[in-house]
Length: 149
Image (cartoon, rainbow, N blue to C red; front, side, top):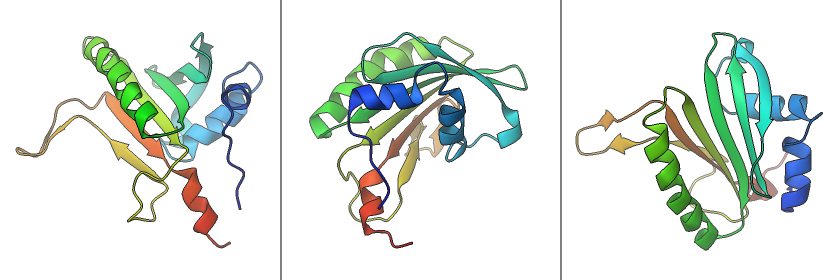
């Protein structure tokens, strides 16, 4: 079984403190749709306890704002989406990309075996993506309990 970090302090120390840039970079490279050779550097930004906020610079000169946090339950998930509403409104005026990563401490999608899901702002009726500069990832590490290696 893979270790699952549930403590916000440990999470922020592991992924959001000076000296952990290489760990955070490897974590992001493991699932983001960005070629490995495009990662240049990351700079941590002050944020609330339990939230890792950073600016990822690419070798092409782009800046990607990344926000990561552990979500303990569905109620907290809904609260994060309320906060995201303001972030999305502000982001729509910015040329920088926003990636939100929610590490769920519960199983959101019990009927599939995928450990991660990627969402964007999308019009399902017209099959049209509104913006490609906002992505929301959900990770379900609890599903690793059922994996055999």
